[in-house]
Each structure stands twice: as structure tokens, then as C-alpha cells.
Image (cartoon, rainbow, N blue to C red; front, side, top):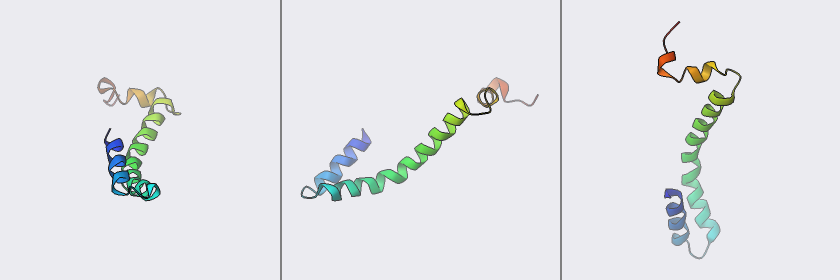
Length: 67
């Protein structure tokens, strides 16, 4: 919802040039989303990567102790 509101504000601030409004919105959105992209990639690797099931077990508190 915040992205939609920010996009609306950027477009409203530049009513005669949609491209400028989009550029303004993207300048703020891309850096913010890079952290989300990193976290998503990390979780995908933990869930579907080559270290299954160990990577999933490591996320569970009862399996975080050294054996």
C-alpha cells in the first residue's frame, strides 16, 4: 500500500509528465527493494538450496545447538 501511495504522490507531483513521476518513484523504490530482494534470495536458498535439510533445521531453535 505504501508503494501505491508513493507512486500516486510522485505522479500527482508531476501531472504533466508521467515519465518524470515514474522516475521519481523508482529512485526511492529501487534502493528500498534491494534489501527485500536480498532477503528473498536468502530465504529461497535456505528453503530450496543444495544444503537441504540442514539449512532448514538450522532455522529451528531446537536444532541450533552444536551436536
